[in-house]
Image 1 (cartoon, rainbow over the protein chains, first blue to last red):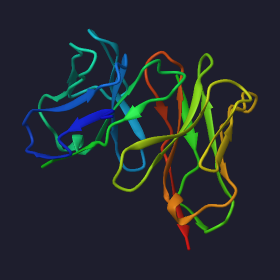
Image 2 (tube, rainbow over the protein chains, first blue to last red; image 1 turned 180 degrees about the horizontal axis):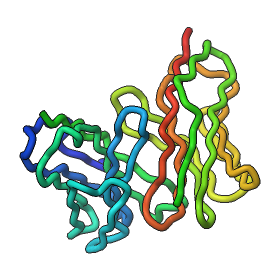
Image 3 (cartoon, rainbow over the protein chains, first blue to last red; image 1 turned 30 degrees about the vertical axis):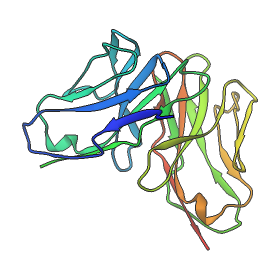
Image 4 (cartoon, chains in turn green, brown; image 1 turned 45 degrees about the vertical axis):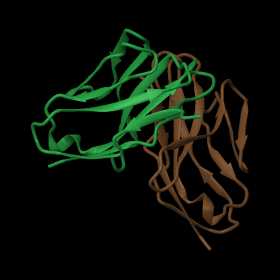
Length: 113
Length: 111
């Protein structure tokens, strides 16, 4: 009953470094998405995927890259980290999206110094 | 585009008080509506949902009714407990891409 697994839980990066936030789900969900959570701004959609090989941009895609080579995995890549990317990142997945809601991972807290 | 507006917090209540957190939305098509809860230091958990007009979602004493005529989905609970202290997010999904969230409302319940 793993659900949605995000790694790492915490990360500190220096400006300009790159890294990948991992997200994996074991529920055979088609829909997966990445959000960032900043104080007072709720959750904003970064990128999403409606199936393996299909990705699209959300509200705040700049500085991030994604791919979906398998149904289970949806990694988020920071190409060149900036202090503005300091945030908590959540991955979510859903089977049908509209009817049953999304399952969320426990989040990755990222600090860019 | 789609959007969700929630009342600003924090909302501070005494234990056993009545809770209302307002949520209104703008969306194309016929969205499903959700309330998610985030306890301190944790991820988001689905609290309740409604998939069509006049549906009432309920869970753990919380309720919300999908009102298409007023484009609202207000969260209510008759008697809050200290353990309900958390951040509550209203969200919608049109089934086309992903969730659209409100900014969240922090609830603090005092003993």
